[in-house]
Structure formats: C-alpha cells, structure tokens
Image 1: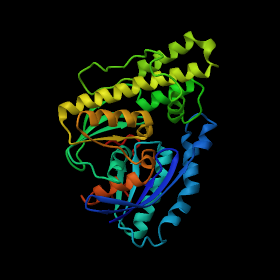
Image 2: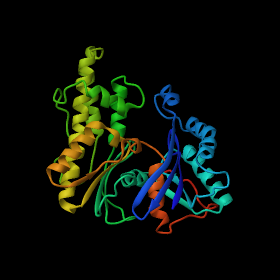
Image 3: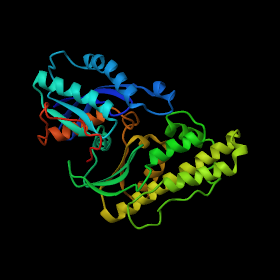
Image 4: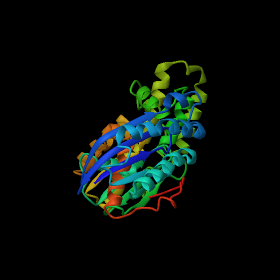
Amino acid sequence: MRILAIESSCDETAIAILNGIDDSLRVESSLVRSQIDIHAAYGGVVPEVAAREHLEMITSMIARSVRPDGAGIDAIAVTAGPGLAPALRVGVEVAKTLAWAWKKPLIPVCHLEGHIYANWIENAPEFPVLALIVSGGHTELVFMRDHGSFERLGETLDDAAGEAFDKVAKMLGLPYPGGPAVDRLAAQGSPKAFAFPRPMINRDDAMFSFSGLKTAVLYELRKNDTRMADEAFRADIAASFQEAIVETLVEKTMRTAGKCMPKSIVLAGGVAANATLRDRLKEATEHRGMTMHLPPFQYSLDNAAMIGAAGYFRAVRDISADPLALVVDSNMDI
C-alpha cells in the first residue's frame, strides 16, 4: 500500500510517499521544508506566517512527489491535530481536495501518533510497547498493546520538557529553536556544576512536572547576572539543566517499564533528537535487558514519513474519514 502523507502542524511543510507491506515500511521519498529561518526573527512560531508559508510550498512539493492524477497512490494520510490551527488547516484542506479528486481514502492522523510510529519506519518494535513522547507541547508515557491501542500512563502536569528547553534557551540568550541550541551548548559544560531539582522523580507514578525546574534555572541566572557573558558559565547552566531533565525522563520511564513490562521501549517526539537523551535512554534499557527503539534521526523532528507510517497502520484497519467532513482538531489526541 502506497501512502501520500502530508504534515503541516507547525513550521515544517512536509510531504512523503511511504510503501507498506504487513509490518514492513519503506520511505520512497520524504521532503521537508523548514521555516526556522523565518520564525527565528520572531523568537518563535507565528501561526499565520506558518500557514502562509505552507500555502506557498505545499502544492509544488506534492507535484514533485506524485503524478497529477494520483496514480499509484492508495490512500492519503494527513495530520489533523494537534498543532497550530491555521497551519493544520492548510494540510487538511489540500488532503481533502486530493482525496475527493482522486477518489482515495483519507486517513486523519494524530501528530503524536505519527511521532510514535516513526519508530516503525526501519525496524518494527514488538508489542507491548511503552512510548516516551517528548516534544514542545507534550511529555507523556503511553502503553500500546497493539496497533491503535493507546493507554496514557502519565503526562506532564505543567510545562512539557520541550517547552522547558525552549524557555531556558531564551533565558540563556540562545537562538530559536531553543532545544537544539541548549543541547549544543550543554556539550561544552559540566552536568554537575549546578544541583538543579529533578521534579517528581521520587514519586511512584508516571507523572512529570518541569515548571519548577525552569524556575530554578531562572533564579540561578538572577543570582549570577554578572556572569551571563561568560560562555563557560552559560554552558554549565545548560548542561546541568539538561541533565536534570534527562535523568528525570529516563528514571520515570524505566520505573514505569518495570511495572507494565513492555517488550519494547520507544522514544518519540521532537526532543527525541536530543543526543544526550537518546544515549542515556539507550544505556538504561540495555543495562536492564530491554529492547530500545529510537526513530531514525531524520524522522525524529516533524516530517511526513511518520504521518505516513501511522496512516498506513490506520489504513490496514480500514480507518478513514469522509473528505467533506474532516475538520482540523488542534487538540486532537491519541
């Protein structure tokens, strides 16, 4: 089954063609047009600007990927939420039009589900699966017994890990996007320089909280405002902050895994691109004899291949939507 996938939930316009047979997936093409340079001037994503950029790019990107009559495409998958409503609407309306014109099934996909299914692109995890979702808006632990079966075991009570990365990056005067900038700066510092809190790490549940950690960093910077020009100081702050987040995420994940006993653990979401988190989670799972799956690096960030992967497994379960009835759901959840 060949899937045309469309992703426009935030500031990447992405188109992919994915071919699936049983549990084997192959990405035939994947195009991603990032708007980072545009939104960097604003210090964050402006929804209306993102939508205009999607409109400008999406048609030509689709034309590069498929024939005008849709020949060879069996279904169309599109991100229907969550995300920025104006940006989502561009991808959804284009997908609806193509599905109607080509008479193809239209598969609405949750963006978070797509991030989870990025792990199926190269090597399918074995069920049951425990997924750690870490992104700008979400930090969750989700248990999957099979395709389409999602049980949320825990989530953040306030700031998501990715959101905390972005806010601390701004405190440190780092450019947008903040997460990768903190990761790069942290590589030059000491993770033991500052004893930042590990929020809720000792609670025997799967819940997270990162607001207090972010505030602790703010207070430390205020106490040392005269050192903000010192690159080594800022690197130590970044490294110590990142260590607190990574240690919390890994400890909570492994403790939860000890309770639900998954056969596979997968990492999902934009923060899955964080090198320290990837390494530490892999070390922890190997130490405890568990199987760890990491999405290929190019599919960790927003892309359409992951939407195609999730769409494929929805399509084989015959889950589709009426193109005329599908609407954007900016709060869509798995």
